[in-house]
Length: 184
Image (cartoon, rainbow, N blue to C red):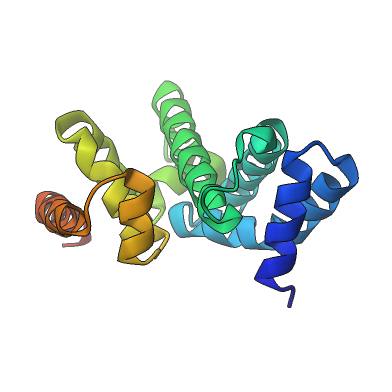
């Protein structure tokens, strides 16, 4: 098990342009990234694909990591964004090629994962929340999916703790009916 401090240290060095530190960092965080993507995308291949995107983004954008927050926190944001991006892409793909369900053929798991995935309800709810109450999305993602603590989220989103708690409460209230529909 690697130490968080080691990861933070590598991230700081990578942010200043140290390529070797970046390579080590990417190797170090990969398993964690795949696991986090799996929280959004239950189908293994989808999670793996999203994880690739995350590592790519980290490599591309590490110089924008200021060290103002912990690297692990910065990484969560990248994970959440890439996973949701991947979800939209999968959904589009599924919509473009309607699967004719025929007993004799195995249905392609890449197109069905979005439909059959247990987190479909959550991702769908996030999409709706984004359209209807965009300011409620971040608190919900950070707290219920990334499981960051309140103080850290408040700092990230740049709002007082009390505001965060009421937004989170509101966000959960908004998505609850959508989620219970799906899980019947």
